[in-house]
Length: 176
Image (cartoon, rainbow, N blue to C red):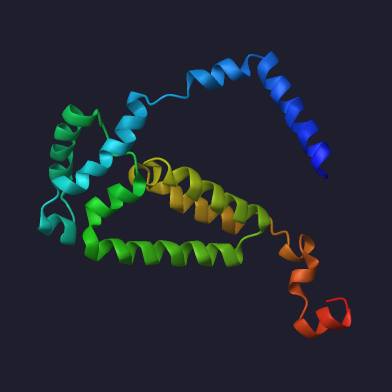
């Protein structure tokens, strides 16, 4: 796409945004609200943890008790960040073990899944990382594994044939 076409496409998109009222809706949400403040405020939880809790993790009752000062000071009703919740629960000793186990599971599923299964993996991890879904609903990983492993297998080769040629075949032009 050359520069002129790019500018014309950008202008067309801008006209559509302005005439459909979409610009007004976008402008309404371009401010710092209480929800955004709560998402930032939840990271103050780390400052409330004792050194023992940082190393070994925090009991559930203690974690719930720590949310009250966060609610009063920053408007945090619940820890929404999955990674922060897991760190606070498992501590600096348990969190790396959990993280390595999760990465190993995702890698194993990635190698055994179809292209659609890989899309499921990436989508769930992106969505779950932006909320506390994995922290509260632990069956999501079990469901993800079942869905990826039982999804009808479409070979990855059908999507990117050249990626599976041997280096010698790529250089000689032989189909692989």
